[in-house]
Length: 259
Image 1 (cartoon, rainbow, N blue to C red):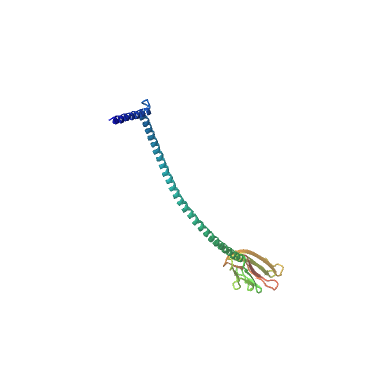
Image 2: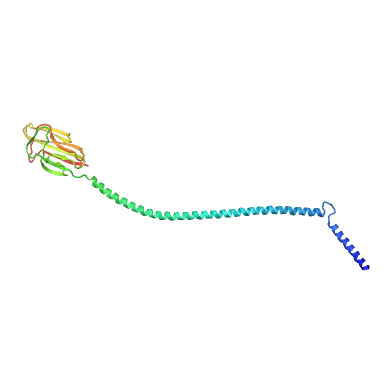
């Protein structure tokens, strides 16, 4: 019994000591009470938690942006690689094409040069005036009446075969500028009146009378632009007495000056 009371007293003393300790740790004023302190601590924890959540959300958003940026960079890298590959293919094609073009260009230049040389040679040949020349004369003393063609049966030169002794006419086989010359010789006290005719068109006419009774020779010439097939001959414009001697002869000649 006594032991029990001693234990009871000891318990009461311990309880009182504990109670005093508790009340001694709390602030004396209501504002600074322990509950108020814990409430402030709780509020601070809540605020910190909200800040932490906000920070975590910001980190999360930043992470998403970084991931999106990395993905975009990866896509750009793929595009850049494709572009670089295309550029490389084009460069290879250009190099191949350039080499082929240079080869073809060299061949084309050589061909052009060869053609130019051929053209130059052909042009030189074309620029050379072909030799067309004839010279014919009368055979003896003749009288040619008015409006008749003067015959020149004796052919001395017929280069180009343009003169026909049977008609006493020259027919052009090459177009160009020609000069035609007529020398006519008359007996004393006789007339000779002649005209050079080109396709029925008079080119040049002349006449001579030997008054001193001796034979005389005169000449006339005419230039004419003649086309292929044109005809040129000599015609009497009046009754004309013509003669032919070894030193002096009535003749008709022509030559191509330029084609």
